[in-house]
Length: 372
Image (cartoon, rainbow, N blue to C red):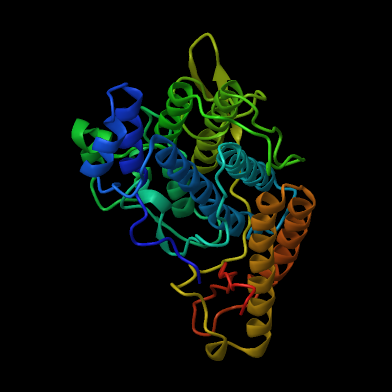
């Protein structure tokens, strides 16, 4: 499986370098790069490209956990299923926008070359200590999802801390500030575009249902980043996304609390509304590291695992092809591959694991390079 190089800079390192550059000191980004182990990034533009590649990888990394939770819901029309499905669609949009921004400044988005593994940390060291997992929808999964989508200045409920540290740790200023949000990372990218004013070209960008815009100016970058933040990450002052819908964090919060959240503009706070029942799910176990070996599972399971791995790999290869050739046909076919993956995944979730106490199998989201 293709992995990020060990020398890949963390999101915090990249944000530090971008912020130093944005302060305007001569050569500041190079000094910051040297101080944070990024000396291999020889220019401001290199640093910006590296940051955008991290954004692409990070946005994609949220999809397998969200899709596992979504596909475990037995009733696909359940309100919770509809809400998670919209989140997954928007994460695809966010990945596409980050890839378009990277392509706009001459970069080549890498999707099937830097593939996240599960269980494992989020790419770029975001929310250090959080381990992203593949499982059915559970309250523990929702804890992880809320931390992934945490807005600036907002913490999940006290009982929803998925880290080893007690809740009091996160009330401590030093501990709280050490946990950088995805929104803060995007703010640094936006500011770098404004200051650097790079040459922006539409070549090799993608448009279509899940890639709403081609980036042609710094203003487009700002609008794209604001959309990403409004929909999910970095929503510091408003729980609403741009289409008058709850942002991702608040969608997961109402699922966790089991109550619809209704925003009261007069109170500038939520009013708890009708009950939001937790859906019935297939009891998919947390997938072990490396996934299930074919030799250790029944033949039917091995065949379904093979089908899901093939569909997932095809999806990644098609997404990679989108930005290599600059067309959207591959994007459409990648969505088709996702539906194939859904079919085999839901079938796996209905097969009990021998000796597993009723828990079932699930997709492993393992990438196999096409050359193999």
